[in-house]
Length: 275
Image (cartoon, helix red, strand yellow):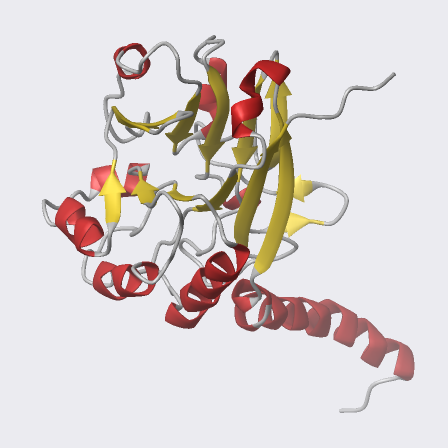
C-alpha cells in the first residue's frame, strides 16, 4: 500500500504527535525537577519573619512510579539553599507503605535550621499505617496532626487532611501562643476559604499536582475535590497568603505534561515602603 505525501503527513499528525507527547510526558517531564523561588509578602508587624525561607514539597506518591533520584536531587537543592524549615505537605504514598522506606531514606538527608515537618494527605489517611509516624521520625521529620510547634518568632501548625481525616483547625490554632504569627500546613488548598484568621500569615498546601496533565492555553484538565479553586501557585486573601505546590510525584499514570515536578522555596518578605 502506498500513501500520498499529504496522507503521510496526516497520519503522522494523527498518531505521531500524540505518541511523541506521551513519550515526552512519561519519560522526560516527570523527571525534570523545577525549583520555584517565590517571595511571600508580609505585613510590617511581622518583620521578625523577614527573610525566613521555607522549602516545600508534597504529593510524592512514591509507590506510584516514585523516583529516588528525583527526591535526592530535590534534597541536594534544599541543602544548597540554606533554608530555615522544610515542610512536607502530604501524600507520601498512594496505597502501599513499603516504598515509603526509600522515600524517608532520601528525605532524611535534608538540612534546615529548624528541622523538617510533615502533615498527612488524603491518601496517607485512606491507607494509614501505624508505622508512618515512626518512619518519618526515624528520618528526622516531625509529623504534625492537628498540633503545632512553636519557635521564637512564629508557630507552624499542621492540620489533618480534610478529605481523609477529621481536622480540628480552630482548636489547633487556639492552642498557639497569641504572640506568635502562624504558618499552616494543610494538604488540601481549598481549605483556605474555610477560615478567617488574622493570626495565619501563610498556608502551604499540595494535593492538586498542579493538574499533573495540563492543556496549552487552558491549564489543568482535571483537579481533585478540595483542590479545584486553588490549583497552583501563590494566592492572597486579606493579609494572608496561600501557596500551592505542583508536587513532585505522579498519581495513577507516570506522566506530567506542562506541569513539571516542583520543589518550592518560599521566602517571607516585608516589602519596602514607597514614598
